[in-house]
Length: 167
Image (tube, rainbow, N blue to C red):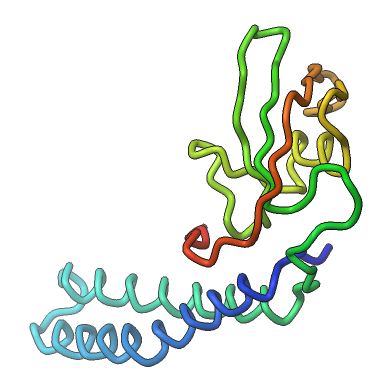
């Protein structure tokens, strides 16, 4: 399955890759070399930590490069009148008697605690393309589902200041 990302997502990932390659990688290589000079590597915590950071950086670079390579670029605009990417949605959850504010974003910018949910999440799938006034059934898994009423939809746009997730 390909991740659906916007041009801004791709740009932000490329900027992170460039920073990690041009700034962080030389720094981590230098730290590994300095820690290696301390002597016995079997009990050298500084060396092990420097290697761990360097390997984590290299892994993140590969991950981002693979995401860019396999991404399906989608427009940030709207198709139709229903809930679309980057829209702000007010939901009412009757089971909890709770009102919830969410914004539909790409998988790269998810932060559920801050109200940014992915279009691919169960809630995102349920509300995508739907309109204010509709009640949808959110299917969490085969046994669990819950109703959600779409109270309001405010058109949104791709916000380049929204950070990409680190995991």
